[in-house]
Length: 87
Image 1: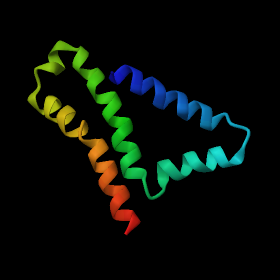
Image 2: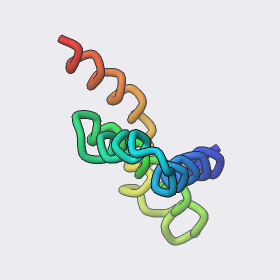
Image 3: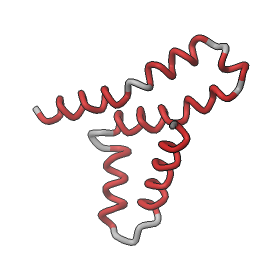
């Protein structure tokens, strides 16, 4: 699942960077550096970290496994951020 999500995020980034319409680039910059930057980076990193579990040495590190579990909660953090910013 992480591979599919990573591919979708990368595709979205490439599409936004190569877009001819300035609004798409602005939207990407706003997501990366704007009010929702924390949520964007948590989601993006949470798609990359599980790929480290392909390596057996890294799989045995409890800190990495804990990081995967914590970052899997990033959709909840995103929803909380949206709710807090709406107020």
